[in-house]
Image 1: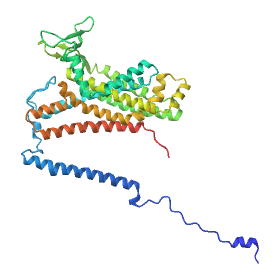
Image 2: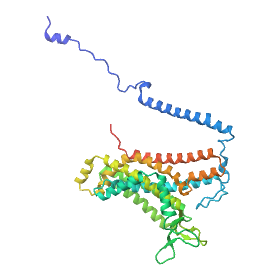
Image 3: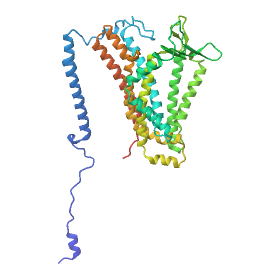
Image 4: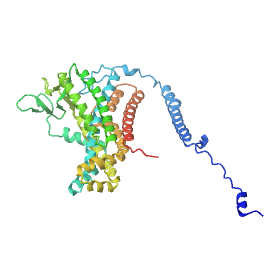
Amino acid sequence: MGSVGDMNNNTATPTLPASPSTGAKPPPWRDIRVLRVVVQLLAVAGVGALLYWLFIVNLIPGLEETGIDVKDFGFLNQPTNFEIRDAGFDARQPVWKMVVVGIKNTLLSASVGIVMAVVLGILIGIARLSSNWVVSKLAAVYVEAFRNTPALIIIILFGDAIFTNGPFPIFNPNNPPWQYKLPGSDTNYLILSKDRWGIPSFIAESNAAVWWIIVGLGALVAVGVWIWRTQVNIRTGAPHRRVLFSFGALAAIAVISFVALGGPYSWSWPAVSESGRRIVGGFATNAGYISLTIALGLYTASHIAEIIRGSILAVHKGQSEASNALALSGFQRYRYVILPQAMRIAIPPTINQFLNLVKNTSLGIAVAFPEITSLTKSSIGNGRPAVQSLFVLMAVYLFFSIVISTVLNFVNKNFQLVGRT
């Protein structure tokens, strides 16, 4: 009879089944990465098939049966047959140059409107959360008034209130515009009338291109300074101050090179022409541009203000409490703690507001501003093919949308926190 020890030694140890290797890949029909690519390809194929059926199978053959050749874009080289106000555009110039003028005007209105909307939107969004009752209520009234009014109504209102029935004089030889001169000189710094306004501007000299090349090299230096200050912060823990050092280096290079080249740009001051009908010199803009840009900037700012307010409220209140515990001022609290976190939330919906503002510039037709939609409409009215003209117009807005989305999505990606596994 064996001992207990012998019995224990003779007991077989159960063998567990081998676990599958953690590095084994799932089959393709269960791999989420493969499925994601397949679904995206199917979606693209479906959209492509739908567009093919709509345009290639139906629209284009139907138009060609009526004698309209939608594949002929030779009209772009034909004369435009109308002049463009305040653009120095002759009626004999080709249609494609008209498109360029329209793109430039649209870009000029949209870029200034976006800057205005962002600045006002941030300020008003913060004001809505102010502890001062008057400030918060005034900001709320602004938001509700502009956000709930159609953009077209605001554009027409500004055009009528500022220009059509505004206090400014009509621009003609018998009724000169208001001219504001620099003290002790005959130089105008501002010209106001119902038709157009004039402000100072810069004129490029012969060495302007050289200066821009130097500024471009300075931008590369600024990037290097940014990387250097980042490495200093990582290595020593000292404040990086990247913005101060980088933009300071860029500004120093720009200013020093500007002085060394003898001034690649010079001032141009607005003046009334001898005929008394035009503004020569400076930067002259018409009533339509001012009405459209101001109206769209104020309208879009009301939407951005709500985005900023919601994004700030989404930041945990413990962040504000910690800022107060560190005795940060109100400006420091927003600058260093609240806004950097809120912008991660605010940027995606703000992209849509920028896109809407660019597309809303097409409403400039209501105040006779020659943006791309207004000029396309005039071109069609002068006998140019409608379908091809609208294709060109769609391509222009698509280009604007893709550029804005690409840039802001890149910014948004760099603002987001990187998760750690």
